Length: 408
View 1 (cartoon, one colour):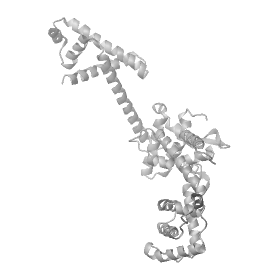
View 2 (cartoon, helix red, strand yellow):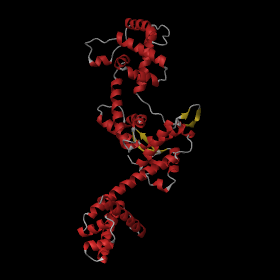
View 3 (cartoon, one colour):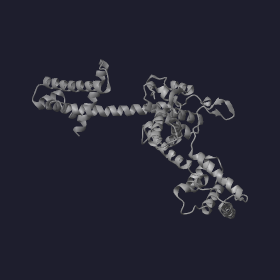
């Protein structure tokens, strides 16, 4: 698999498969134009993929709160493109780890992408600043969980699945099917009646319980009788009396909803807009209105970098200061810490003023030289005259703060 290097490609291209394996990267024109528009500013072009991952998550978060669905979908599409590589490698690993797996890499890849909503809802930038690192863990766990469910579901008969299904999963399945609360309540009551009256024999083996047969007529009659009696007390909308045939059909509908819920599907970002067969969902995306959000994120990142660099400079200068001669440190302390003039220092040390001036200059030059070398090696900064003047100012401020705090 050829990895993407370009920021625009990372947030606008998608994996294409042939024979279940990676074939090539397909570019989405609308997402590509969206990223190109974001990269107009020179300072923005140099941002890393981690920066843009966090940026598009912020757009998704803000648009979710303000109910701006087009922007929310745009951000989700960019993040889906961003997570193509980790989704692919998670899928590749799953096909290796699971023995006798009938799914190909492309199948597991689609399962991984169906977890995007869970990743977005579970990510907290206050606790984890790297969106991709967080997503990688969720993708692998999600694929394994879905495959375990599917392996179990694939060998279960409809009636065995109803026996294994929890009430929580049943309700979630019916909610996903778009049913109202009143109808869901009636199905849940029906399911409870089924579990009460349809109980496998205690000597059934594990394999046999996965292949439970259809309830016989007497059991269906018992389920119908219990449901028709309890619906008045259990349901806000009791509805009409159900016969055994309707009971069977309703239970099979629950099975269908559960299988659909446990087998997540992925909707393409190019899905036609409802009622507009020639349009695409991304056609309705407005121009980006997230310039202030982008600016805030850049400011935040630059502030973090500035604080990090300031910490490194402080630690470096402190280390250098401990390496210079004691008599030079003493003069720096008297000058910056105690606020003495060169003349006062000379009197206190019983020496000449020009000697104090020479030692003070030598101490600062030593510190400035070491700071310049560190900047070249660590920050990759070229030492121009302007940079050296700036460093000299920084050094003066640091010496005043350092010895000022030491003397308190």
